[in-house]
Image (cartoon, rainbow, N blue to C red; front, side):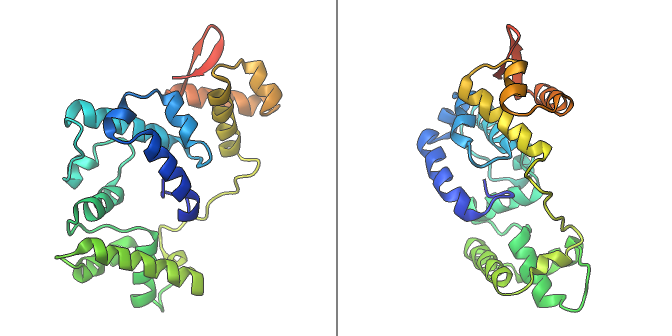
Length: 230
């Protein structure tokens, strides 16, 4: 949930989500419709679908127990090396090296004040050298808190990162239309193409493209000429 979303927006939704899906089994056996219904308000619905698929894989292949091996974690839907590393550090207190935006801000500000473009390859050896081998969880908590502090008190050091990208405008974007379409289908249960163009967006070409994407990704399917959540 914290991927591309600020903590203050996540807290209440996290509590609601955990209340609805208290373990992997509950989440795995719930419908995608129910999962997306609880997820509404966070956006980036792919994350919810990844979580749903991830829970199903953990239940079916790992007896409902989350693996603690970062290489195995990276085989799960929606988990890359940095998310796998953060899970190992925070859930299992393992001294795994990973990087995210606040950690990146700390090391750029501390070691690269006079450099304009910094790659993660330059940062990772420093993160490894500084890592607390005995209590990595608390160390990473401290790093990330300090990164948040830095961003609130000076120009975001992460902008010097070679991997920094400014998020595109949401208002009027395909992302916004996509989110509205999914929200509308979740709310109504099933909708026609005409319903979508009438209530969501009248730009037929954009709507058609987004619907095709949602169909190809397996978010929605067609039943009796109506769109429903898969």
